[in-house]
Length: 267
Image 1 (cartoon, rainbow, N blue to C red):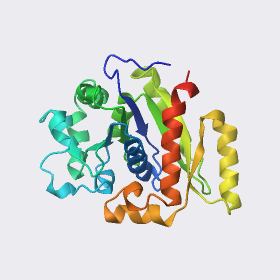
Image 2 (cartoon, rainbow, N blue to C red):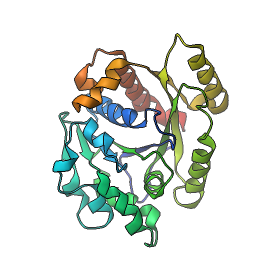
Image 3 (cartoon, rainbow, N blue to C red):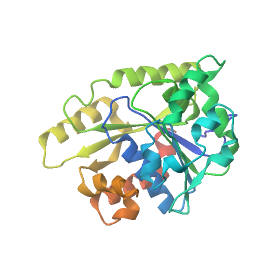
Image 4 (cartoon, rainbow, N blue to C red):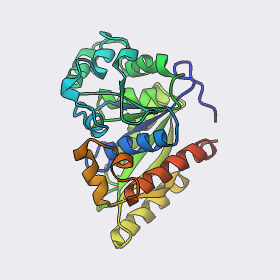
């Protein structure tokens, strides 16, 4: 399948979403972006979460930034001037901070409010091979904007009890967006996170996910890994904190799987 929408024709845009918190969503956004950059793919990490954890996760001090994604969404600044460098030459970030909370209030009365992010990113479409959109842990207007702007949806699923509960709401939102505003949207894949191969529960969740989602479950599984948990406190993706760790190697494998297989999976 070729993704050639009128708004975003070149970049492959992946929305990373799950309304349940603590599933490894931002960890995946940061480290998958870094892994793609390590593979020398020009990548833009778009932080759509007012908490700004993806921004700080790549070493950006959000309190020192005069402008961020909020200013682009409300039309105050051109998006090109909002993109910030990181320590990886092929990775840029469109940062966020608490200002972004105000964007929902200011956009709510606008016509076509769900397409604001898609329109904002249009001018960057030929500059990056990948754009990864990190969403807040809720199905709010920011998440709807990300789903409308994206080509694919990547769903992190933690290998814990009740993991599959609550996904129905996300899948309903996905279907609604696909029907009303983004017919080309498909599921990139379901990513099993916090996988512990010594734990029977992890294997049970993996089995249930594969039973339900079938070929959409990535072969790569992200393990529980101390180094992955430590890296954000140093403001570094795992690639720069400890590339030899199991967590880093898993995200490198995921990046390879996406680069080599996403078109084939959705052909």
